[in-house]
Length: 75
Image 1 (cartoon, helix red, strand yellow):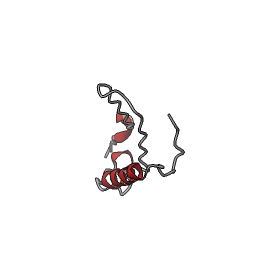
Image 2 (tube, one colour):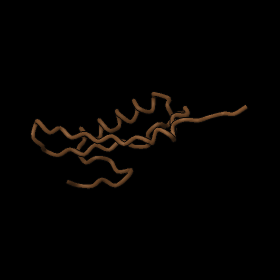
Image 3 (tube, one colour):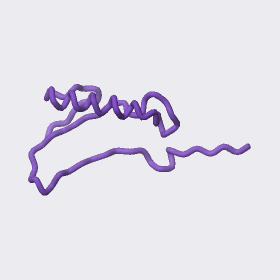
């Protein structure tokens, strides 16, 4: 399995196009950093593709901790 450098573009044109499409759609959600709203929800999307058996479709998703996505205000 190869490792991608942060900020690099996938060498497979189809995967590079999919990465860009996903990034654009995620940032359209308006969730923003730490769920506080804004224009940037994700900084990058990287897809790594490897052959595997049809019964073992691995998926990895990295999200922030629940506690860092909430805020409290005391008046």
